[in-house]
Image (cartoon, rainbow over all chains, first blue to last red):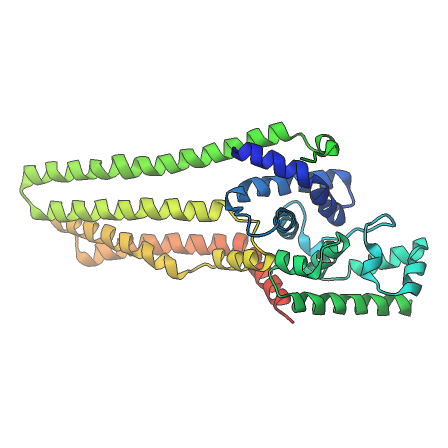
Length: 168
Length: 181
């Protein structure tokens, strides 16, 4: 299989995943497209190093998350994590039934959005992967830290978010 | 295989692939240019050295020529390696590894840079031997050569400070944050 065929196959199979990651970090459609294109460029550049040691989806998520961290189109210090009512697995961010119900109200969602954007860049990356439905093990594989470490970090973020939202 | 129809609306892959292929070609052209230096320029110095020796029967010409040939060979090989390392960042590494590599890549001084000192010393030896033939003082030659190198290093450091230090610092901060707990 040529590099071009391999690339086309990966993009065809994973474009939704890549687009989702791009949507988390850009509210503007044009910016999403620019970042999507940058992820594709980095997939092409990294293609020769794909040995199949990890699942293809994990590999693609790594490229997408790493691109988001180094995305040249915007200062990532100000990078936002965008969510909306349709965001998949949004409830998994808050393991709290009361808050889940509250989230259905638009103003609570806005508050969550504001709090998410107070998070550090790495915490945003962790949450974006969680919203994608990745397991703790898969998130650990993408970021390169241990599974218990991922659990600790995510637990801390969830607690922080719950406290902030309940306190409102 | 599952294909995604939305993909075609999102970005047109064909122009992108053409652009990427062009970039690969540009890389190949640069590598060829370095190989050209290696295969053409180095033997050229060799031929000039032999000719000079035949004209003057001076063994200094041979030593100087060999030093230059070794130096340019070393520089050509180092350039190829450095160019590849800096041009192609592997985004498929786990985030922490990619960031650590970025921190390392954007350090102003690296252990492996010491290897570049060998060709530089060889060029210095060649230059010193050549200029000694013209009665230039050893002190002047050394001051001139290492002064020029120092000037280059200072310019490089200024560029690093403005362009690469912020990237290194930010990558370092993210590494600390990931390893924080």
